[in-house]
Length: 267
Image 1 (cartoon, one colour):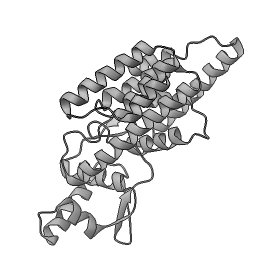
Image 2: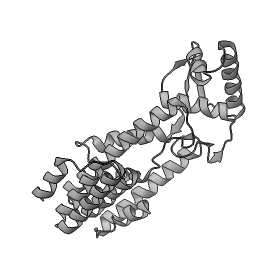
Image 3: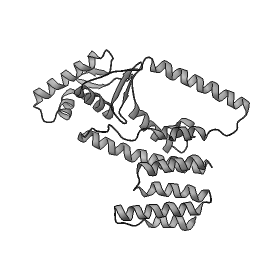
Image 4: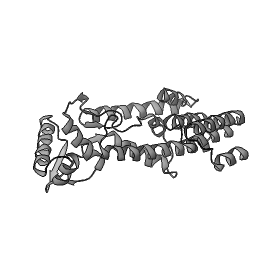
């Protein structure tokens, strides 16, 4: 729904030349993506684990999935002994090394070059596209205020928010929290940037998405309130404030910060 709404927000009138140029540009972009998808391996870690090559799904046993996910999250060459110890904590060194060899063998059987080896080190192949890496690149772009926002930057706000749901390894939980925090902050920054550009409808939708993902996060509610005030909708700003105040009182037993009170008074 978010993606659909965001797409519709770009329906404002444009000249025929601009419209035609945009259509040609979009067609070229789609063609490039199609060609890339025909030749690349793609690893998805946001939501559920998924691996594909040339659009074909590749099934791997859980140990092989865990190895690929760990290499993708670390995103650097790692010693084989370090990997074995990190992934098979409860095994002896010999059994962990054997499990690593078995996982690598399973990955090789897929027929795709997914792991690169050098000097007793392993890393994810540079030819594998990873959605988590793309999401972190989006976070960096959105927070770079010197860089103009693109339609893709806005549309990417609808990316899945949870890293490897249903996985509970410590290394997954740590990275999940890191991604959650950075994405939440990026949504708020994006909301503020859109509002500053006068794109208040898009800003509101992004702000509401931030609130939906993190209902107890005050800065997300402040972003929404700021948009309402920019639109002159003080009653909506007060409604959002009241909702948040009741929520945190019930769930956390706290009150909104003075910063939120100041925002309302200034509006």
